[in-house]
Length: 221
Image (tube, rainbow, N blue to C red; front, side, top):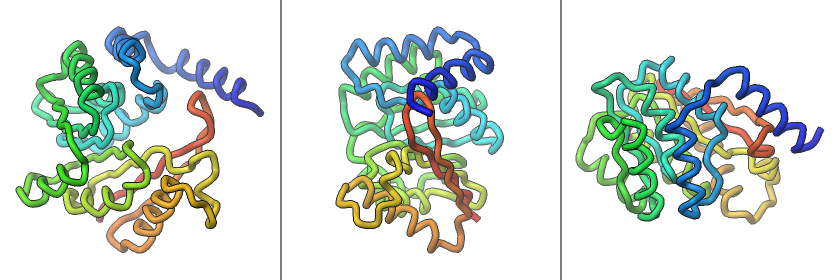
């Protein structure tokens, strides 16, 4: 098997399970036009996020790593009309593009973008005692996953679902001797999940249009 076959399979699956969506397509186009890196989730992955949030019955969603707002749109569509999604983005330009895409999708009423260092923002959430989230999606810099996990657990409650993207790194996460900061961060993230008796987790490796990677899913108890 090779990446060309993975891509063809993803195209087939998306063709059979999804319908054309102007807002999502516009979000991808505007992100490309504005020079954002093409590291957004694939369409079938975005739909999976939406379905997982719907299965959870999420009313409050937290996302780390907005980019152009593509996954934000998928997640926000899982919310009821009075739901809330907060997405954190470190780069002002990315946030500006995302806000326009979210507005175009008609989701500004439920989704808001906060710009800044995610650790600082999360720490302020903890200090301020904001209500816990039902669904949390981690898709920011991987070296910081341990710090993010430590904080989002404090912003969770029993039943909160935490999904972390890009946790396979083309298989490099299995290399105990890797010096890659992202690999080290993901490995420590998994160590923290394994040691926490109040979290039940699994992880799945995937192949597709985004290459060889995968995600973890955790439920807080």
